[in-house]
Length: 124
Ligand SMILES: [Zn+2]
Ligand SMILES: [Zn+2]
Image 1 (tube, rainbow, N blue to C red):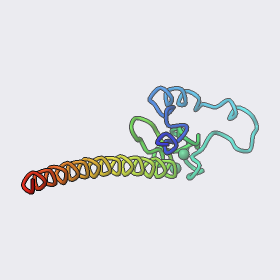
Image 2: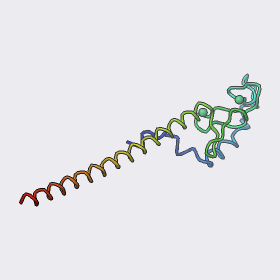
Image 3: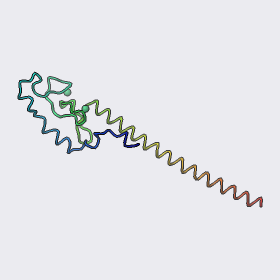
Image 4: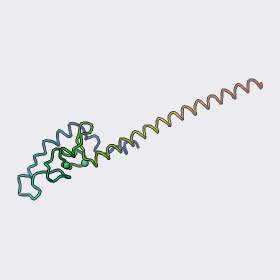
């Protein structure tokens, strides 16, 4: 169940993956007569692309490419990663809380049994 909260591409988001993505920037497409021209930042058409978002492959300028844990992400993907990280953190927190409650319940049960035995002994 926990694995479902991890984005499918999360494992790929390593320095190796960005190393593979970066050399691809001088795209052969720019040599064609395409109206797109050289690859530009998706948010700033006047700026050349500096990096690709490793998650959605959006070309990003220096201002838009946000380094995060050694990789570049666009603002949207960065927000998604952060939200996922927060979710994973809260899941871990809930598991810890549940474990603590279980231990407390176990201790309470043991104490109840001990007190019951004590009173049974006194009554006997
Ligand atoms: Zn992205
Ligand atoms: Zn930009």
